[in-house]
Image (cartoon, rainbow, N blue to C red; front, side):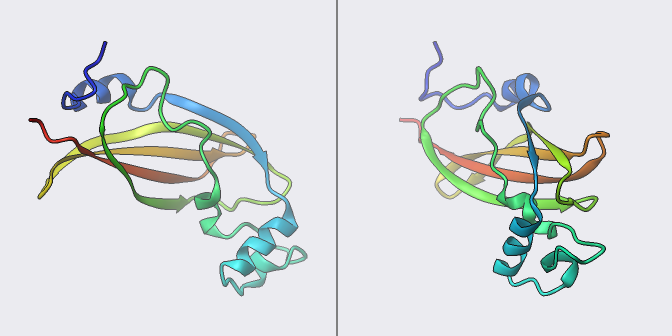
Amino acid sequence: MTDVNAPLDVESLREQFLNVVFDEYKLTLEAQALADYAIACGETAAKFTNPEDPDFQAPPTIASSFQQRKRYPDGFPTFKGLGMDAGKAVAPDKPMRPGVEITARTHMHDIYTKSGRSGRMVFFVNRMEFTDADNILLGSADTSIVIREKPQT
C-alpha cells in the first residue's frame, strides 16, 4: 500500500506512466456549434463564423474546450496535497472541420517538480492529441495540474 503522505517518486512515475494513452474517444464537430463557439469567443473571420465559407473550420482554440474523460491512468497513485489548475496550452496543426470524425487520445506527457516558497510542487501535464481518420495530427491540448505536496513533519 502506498503511503499517501510520502513524497512522490517522480522518476518512477515518469518511467511507468509517460506516453501511455489512457483515454480515447471519437467526436464529430457540427458546423453551427463551431460558428457559435467562434462568435462567443469574439472571432470575426468568416472562415470561423460562417459555415457557408469555402474554408470554414473550427477556430484554433476549439481544442481547449474538449475534456479528457479520465484525469489519470489506471494504477496512478493517490497522494495528498493541494491540487490546482496550472494552465492549458493549445497547439493547432491542421484545421478541424465539421463532419469529420476526430479521435481524441490522452497520455501523460510530462511529470516534473519545482520548488516554491511553500515547498515542492509536482506538475502533471496531460496531452490530448486530435487526429483524423487517416491518423493525421490536427492538433493537441496540454492540461497542466500542479500539486503542492503536503510538507513533511
